Structures are given as C-alpha cells and as structure tokens.
Length: 313
Image (tube, rainbow, N blue to C red; front, side):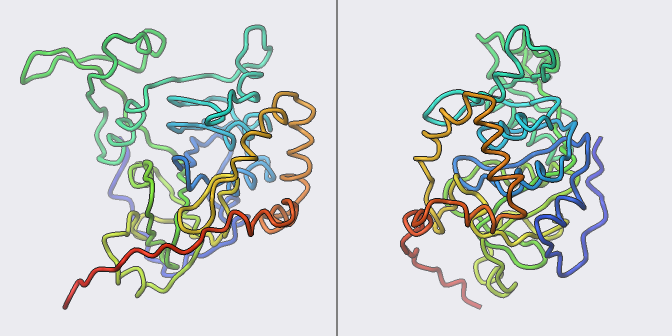
C-alpha cells in the first residue's frame, strides 16, 4: 500500500524550469498522470517529456486526448490506462489507433475503465485505500476485458459490488491558474480530478499560469485545491495548456483541434508537426513564437471578475 506518511516537502521555494522539473521528477518506466479536464491540460509538460525522450511510460488519465496521443506517437508510451480517448468533438486519436489496430507489430497495452471507475481508482489512492467499490459496471462488458475489475459482497446489504484497485501514479502533473513558490495551488472553473490525482501520486509537479505571494493564496483559502505540503516542484509556464485553455487566462483553440484531425491522420504529417513544434523548439516560449500571428491576442481572456468575500478577522 502507498505510504501516505511520506516526509513533508519543507522547502519553501520549489520553483524550477519545466526542463528541470521533468528531468528531476519524471523517469523512464513511470506511471504518468497529466491531469486536466477540458481546460488546464498541460501540453507544455507533455512536450518537454517528448523532448527529453523519457519513455516506457504507463500513461494514466480519465480522458486522454491530444497530449497523450503525442506521447504515444513519439514512441514513449507502453501502456494506456484510461476511460475515454479521442479528439474532443472532432474524432479519433490517430497515434493511438496506429498502435492498437489489428495487425500492428508493436501494440501498446490498453487498460480500460469507465469514467467513474478511473475517478474511483484515484479516490482510493488519495485515501490510501486498497480499492474502491462501485456499481457502475452493471449491464456493461468492461469488466469482461479488464481482469483488474473484481467484485465483492457488501457486508451490510449482501449486494455484489464491483471494485477497482487504487491508482498511485509515480508522478502527477497538475496545471493550475495560480500558485505560490511553496506549491500551494488554486484552481477555478471546470474541475477535473486535480486534487485526487495529486494526493494519490508519489510525486507532484504543479505547473501554473501565475506565481503569486503566499499572502494572495491565504487571502482566498477556499480556492486552494492542492497544498504545498505534497508538491515537489512548481513551474511557472504561462500559456502552458495551449491548445487547451486556462479559465480566466486564455480560451480553447478550437481551430487547432479541428485542424489536428488532418495533421494526425498521416504518420508523416504527425511526425513533421512534432519535429517543428516540439523537437524544433527548446521550450514553451519557442513554441509560442511559432503560433500564428495574432492567435494569442485572439485567445486571451477578457476580464470577468467574481466579487470577493469578506472572511473577517
């Protein structure tokens, strides 16, 4: 069982560059979890993993989309643990298809759950429980193809329940809107499983749009989703989610997702993209310089402030 009594991270300033954080905390063979649900998907971290060639990865996530597909196309993923996979609103993940279709000589392993099955695995991991019981596999055949989904009898009702094992990624990469140098991180807008993934994982990298003083974090404590106590590194990476979005900072680049269908269908054009936009730049700043002129100005969010609260003292 994962030891939740791990030593607290007492270092005050954990700020590293993306290159330093990935090199220091992501290793070949890791179970990797890049969190994000619609927004706050850290493409910058995925691209740095590709640049550093860190392979033999087990890539886990509820909804793997383009960033995981790029890791697969780069040849760095040996196994995908997931619920749903695709290019949201557009189509397939073609890198994934090329590695899983019938007749492929070097297929990646697939381990599939329902959405809540993956949430339940993280809930168990974050609570240091060995498994999580649930009922959402009734009437489906997912359990027939995944031997890790087992069943038990409820000791209170006698009803048969499905169970899924706890998930403990080696490293979780969580993109947030703001954090302090200690790793206390705040998120607003659409939530995914940022908190659960962070607490379930052995190491945590927080990537953030903005680093703010600790006093700013403490002035609005209920917005703090991840405490610095469990964070190993903090990376300041504005626009680190493009083509995904960060609520309040920039919008989703919907045109990119549509255009990606044609780029990714063909292995050559896919590799050409990785060569230009990932291997062909040294960091996220170089990536942003390659984007179409005026794109960042068009995607930049317009202010829409939420009225604050008076905590009193």
